[in-house]
Amino acid sequence: MRILAVEDERDLLDVTAKRLEAQGYSVDRCTDGQEALDYAESAQYDLILLDIMLPKMDGLSVLRRLRGQGNRTPVLLLTARDSIEDRVQGLDGGADDYLTKPFAFEELLARVRVLLRRGTGEAANELALGDLCMDLAAHRVTRAGKEIKLSAKEYAILEYMLLNRGVVLSRERIEEHVWNYDFEGGSNVVDVYMRYLRRKLDDPFEKKLIHTVRGSGYVIREEV
Image (cartoon, rainbow, N blue to C red; front, side, top):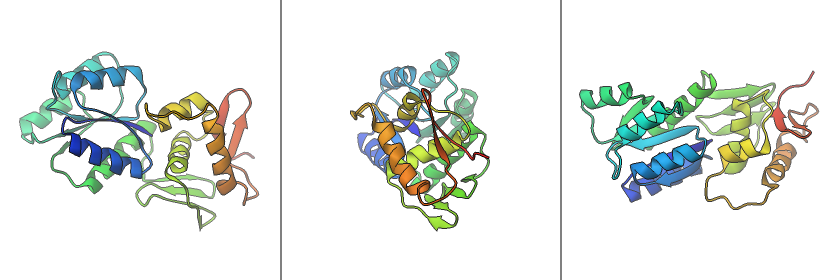
């Protein structure tokens, strides 16, 4: 899943982005409000982490601009301002959640998971398809009770597919949601990772879950 992290404190931004990337998320970073607006208008994000006190354009102005454009990407406000009035202003401005600094990273991760689930209609931290299970909180994948070790990028692709199970996903759509602006891979990178996933998730089992739709992309689903 692709996240835009907006924070003018570079050390905090770097730490936050690295911790999120370690969990398999793809993260784009920016340090001012105008840059955040440019990023959000030029790419499709699954979540935006947005500081309020930003140079050039404050976070609330960025939020209002995005909502005014019809952009419904979930937004989690991160700020040191913790008065009731500030919280109400942020939530009324279109934010989906609000977290004050300093925060425990575990709480940030939990809130990120909630907002990403909400965007796809999921209600729990567990994604399942047949005998395949992904525990988002524990960052653990099993099939038929057997734990399957995945790389961060394999995990990210599988999470995105399970959140969209039954939906045919183009290579471009997968790439857009799993890689960030810094990505400089080859044109067949999605196909390469699909081979990795199939080798781990499907090859050892009789029933296959990942399917190629010729000319369209990939879908994860149970076939009768």
